[in-house]
Image (cartoon, rainbow, N blue to C red; front, side, top):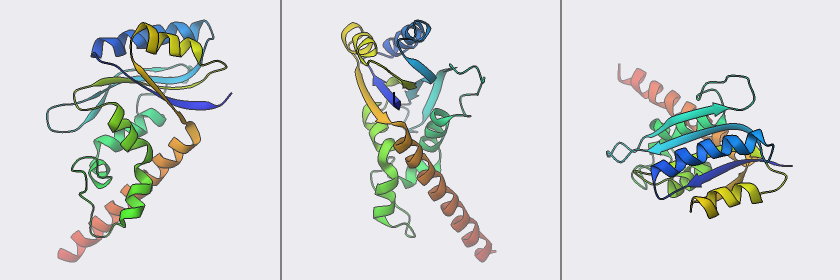
Length: 181
């Protein structure tokens, strides 16, 4: 069983909440082995913010929504690094950034933005599945949604790259601010 980051998107926000409730039942019957799950909204107010609307940590560690991979992904998209990654304007890349480096770091973020568009609400799930049919049946057949499964390690690597880029950018910004003073 391989750990995956599963992105689910729907026509209506209410379907994401319904899926959230029903995926909990799949976890209870051991049809999936969930780690974390979140209902995520991509604002349509021009601010291009992602927000966690509801969150569940299946592991019992009581991690907050910001303490796990889902929280880090949403935090990166909602912060200044989201602009650097090019999702806000489609190409606003700092002069000190190599275009290939930014494209390499986009990975999961560009994909997530493509799947959960402005104004949409989706569901993110970190889980292992012995059989993908129960989740497929629920999301695609019952709720009419889409499912995309990503390799957990690859997503984790994309998050690390984005965090490193944010840290470097912050350091460069602080250096240039210090030079101006």
